[in-house]
Length: 494
Image 1 (cartoon, rainbow, N blue to C red):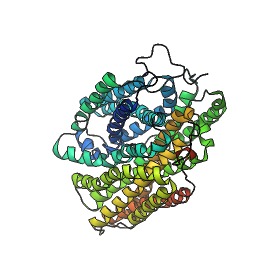
Image 2: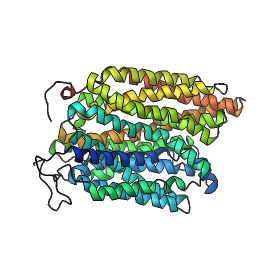
Image 3: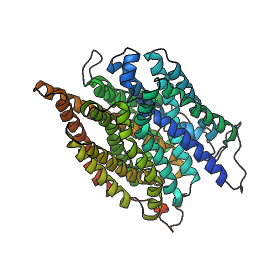
Image 4: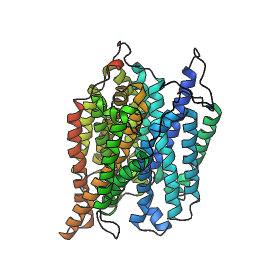
């Protein structure tokens, strides 16, 4: 089966051979970057807003948490299917579909009369977000030559790391000035503008091929990844309290079905029929980088949840103050990303990843020492060190992982990375929050006041991340740049 067989009836033709593609490529990548940034911002924009929504919608904390849980759950279910979609359809078709889902979901959220409609809007938003991220990474790997990928992946790192980091800040500012619905009304014009621009200007940059869809793999992926993320998120919400299913049921069902899904993908991979081609893990650079990325996302999402709790409930800050405290770190990640991309192109992965993992570890161990008496400068410094460390890790890990794959596995590699990110993010939130809750409850039972009990719980939660960071540091010594990205090397496999 040829990789260059164009589907009949494609909506926009590829540009003729010999055409200068640089202007086209800049437009395509720019559109994808702006759209993905807007979408990923929505993953964490709700974190500061939950207390306000609980009051306005008259719902409990566990019910309000579904706004985040449903988003993560949908992402985990949809992302494994994106490898098929990106191979089967044109860039423009996939882009318009993703933006349409996202914009419609944002409109539903802005108009939602109550929690069920708001959760439904978040689910529709997540469908678009899940498609866009792998599309961005696959397109960049297709368009950008190996020796320049570090700089371009630096821009992706801005999207991946800065968007979730500044989500709480933007949410805090909006909630301080406006009604919660404005979190969606202000995003909607950006989504619609990107959709209109993409419809008018975007040309196809990939050539689809007819790939079969294994129907059985779709429900296996949905139940497997969905059960796992749901179980982990439920732990984070209430650590076993409430009248729902026992905690082990969704985790056990998700785990068993996920094993069945993985075995089926291994069997279908050599036949080129896998929904998520696990042959990507035959490449050692990809495997090590994905493991490190998963640990880094656990640390990032866990920190995004725990730090605002610490600043508001232990140090007594207002939501706006807490959001603004997280802003310098988020901006630093954005400023460092292009520099890190250039350094990667010049020096490779290991010289960046090891210092980055060290900084992340130092920051998390500092957070373990936080108490009600800790000064604001120490909190700010720890968050800035953590942000800088993550900035030095994301670009090399993204670039090395996908760059180590042959071009026919780019879309599957992107889908694997996206799936790992969502599951690791949910796991980070669940582990951090569960341990925080258990230790806090223990402290209260021993007679500690609320602030000191919560502080001990938060320290225990940060301890999980600090221990994981040591594993990340060890893995950093095994990361290297793919051979065809070494300056002066000839093309290999591209």
